[in-house]
Amino acid sequence: MQMAVQWLLILMAIAAFLGVVLEELIHVNKAKVVLFFGALAWMVLFVAAPDEVFRARVQAALSHNITDIAGLWLFLLATMTFVAYLNKKGLIENIIYSILPGRITERKLLFMTGLFCFVFSSIADNITATLVSVALVLSLKLEIRKTLRFATLVVFAVNSGGVAMITGDVTTLMIFLADKVEITHLLLLALPAFLAVLLLAALLSVGLSGEVIIEKSALQPTRGVDKVIGLLFLLTILGTILGSLLYSIPPVLTFLTGLALMFLIARFFNEDIENDPILEYVRAIEFETLLFFLGVLLLVGMLQFIGVLQGLTALYDVLPVMLANFLMGLLSALIDNVPLTAALLKSDLQMGTAEWMGLTYAVGVGGSLLIIGSAAGIVAMSKLPGLTFMTYMRSFGLLFIAFAFGFMAVYAMGLMVS
Image (cartoon, rainbow, N blue to C red):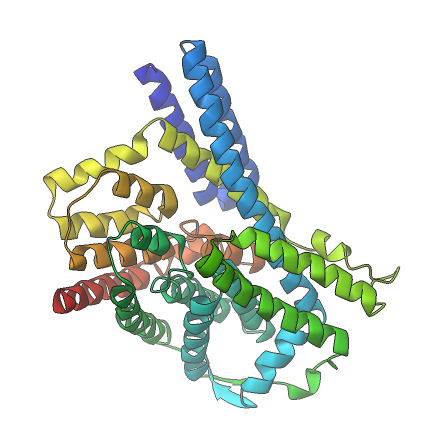
């Protein structure tokens, strides 16, 4: 492929990124911009192909990319439909309010939110954890400035919680399956990752001095069918974890099964009525989020195909391993961490246990530095009014401090165990 075509494709990716950053200035929805450049980039690849053999390679790469996107889309659709139903029926809000005291300081509430997000994302996937956590934040009805602080902590804590579990983060699973780290090494990541969450919570809590009064009287009555579907949601999460561990069942398949059971249960309880049909909750999800994911993953797949991601491994030839790992964490805020991790594993890097633990943390949590750097951030941005690329960037310094602390703590832990 000609160098001019490669530069054109890279410029398209940059233009898409700028479209996200400048959304408030250009007044064009970020999903539309990213989807346009993502689709156009692949069309350019087909048109610029020098021969049929190369065009066949482009077709194979696009098919693989579309397959990955379809899996994520269906998984998101199932998860978001569950959460949309439970949120509409008030079950999530009821559970949250039953745990929280009637009166709590904003600072204490911020720390409790970080703890909840960290623990829940260790059990569930980060998308589900973000959806539930965002529902929690919205239910508090805080002023926008404080809501953004909570949202920032949610994104960081959700990404941090899954990094120590092979079921919590795909990149962690990839590094484990490549025999670079052991389960015991990964579990040790939880402590420094949680300390980093506490540090960020402490930094974000500066200036929070008010109290939040939880209106218990606002609780909605919980019906039997809602409890059953809530239990089904938890069993689906558990089944996703066990199915993936024991039988390598793709999470999307387990969640689609749970979604189908949800529809059948609603029919059994005569809940699927004309004025509130259960399938309508599929339409209640944020399709803007799905389109944004589609555009982003099309662009990342294109960059992987033209070799940009593989070229990043050259950093390890000119920089110390620890610094290169840290930079990979920063890059994961701009580039999807799954293909980035795959490129690093394929390059057969020679590193010790401490370095692999550091890389696991870096690519798992580094995406938190930018709102578009992780699935958690994108989902949160679609659900919280006022949470944009620029408003999230206001906390970049605090996020960087917490990320750097977590990375150094993980590396120190790795040196101890190795």
